[in-house]
Image (cartoon, rainbow, N blue to C red; front, side, top):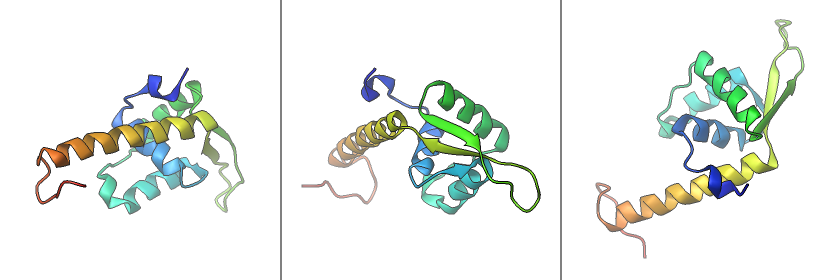
Length: 116
């Protein structure tokens, strides 16, 4: 299956894949990354995050493995993008960029100038 055939992504799925594109991370770290990236305008709660990560694993977009035990002794599962996941998040990013370019050209984004 081509990456484009998996589009469009649910916004939460896209954000999680985008955050994992920065590097491998455990669930709590993904939540912290989302908080640090205010421009994403998304809040990930643990229940939805882990449910979504399991779904993305079943789809072959991410993979998880047991990670190191932090100082509190609770092992954390570390997630990473698969090659397919990287291709899908790239395809979705391109699709969203084209939509934004169209909205900009049609002057639908306040204060934005059309790109030449």
